[in-house]
Length: 178
Image (tube, rainbow, N blue to C red; front, side, top):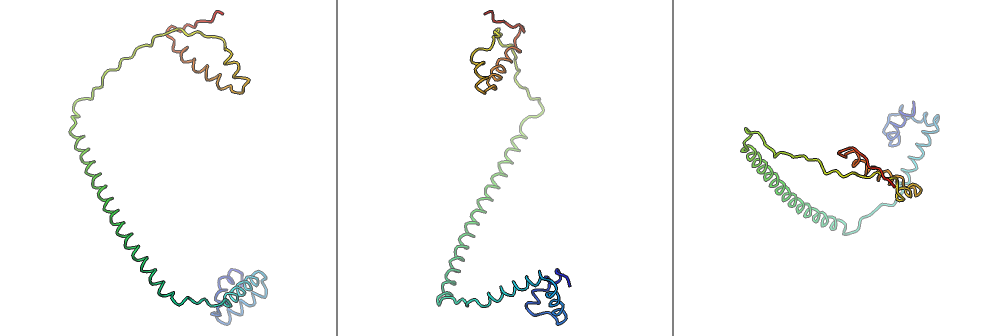
């Protein structure tokens, strides 16, 4: 007999519901296998401790309190079922209203004359007034950003000016003549 088979039959072995041949096989395995013998000892000690616990006796009015509590729970369940019924009716009303509104929208969309093409107003594009932007050497506000550990501000300031230079109409740059 192997350990897997022992574990499968162990509860029947403890309950003494096996045939004599199987009991002998399990006892022989217990003599040979230390791990299964330890498991058997632990389970048998646990059962012995459980069987020796004092019997728990309910109080004299236990039955009466139990029935009263069951009636309270039954009343609460009835109230919850009534509330659930109201919730279902509300959900049904919302669903019916939604279907009616979708039908109204569908009918309204069918009334739109789709035979004529949709005409949008024309879009007029114009060039912005160009003003030459002077390209200057970095000022103190840009130079101080470097040592302060914030080089991103310098890059952000240059990036902010870049579109103006690229969008210039005449593509000429005015140099600072300082």
